[in-house]
Length: 269
Figure (cartoon, rainbow, N blue to C red):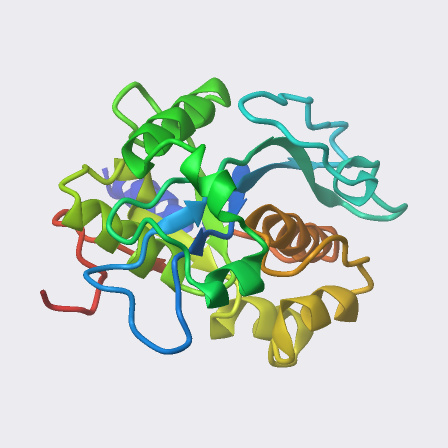
């Protein structure tokens, strides 16, 4: 009996000591939203571009390879997100699908000169787009086509969103949907902020300073496109993520999240 209990204790101890599993997918997103350099957008800022790049993580040495699952509103992805990994890399994160659409704001439907100048998103583009509720519905369908959520938008499998900052989900998406009485899909309850201390800084031993473009180029990746276009920023952020995976970083846990009431952990509302 003692031997049996001792063995059970050892198994439990090994399970507790085991490192958390590496995530299977990462969804890199970078929203654009209504803004002005002279005043705050009231009652809330509204998303005007809703893009994402889906990365599938796999073990190169085990012979794994990410299949191409392009669908939704797929846009072309650059070769340095889809080509074979460099020789010697044991893990990879390959782009397998993308999503991108403009969104029509309804609270402040006229874009400010500052917003147009910053993002190059035109009034005609947002006027021709659907509103945030319809876009979120399409987005969840896209995630479901990748096998990442169920019919209710709850996460399936071990994956997370990846952002360049906490504002995209924690502030902009969450507050806009709350103001408009649109349910936030449950899968948005956690994300990885690359600028958190335990991610970019821990892996590269330096602060992520100088803006996104500077950080992309600092890891040897090629910057492509116009900054502050949400899809362009998502693609270039994904290049950092892929380089981190190829050079040994293990994405195992989120850096921020929301509680069951949709409130960011550590905040009171």
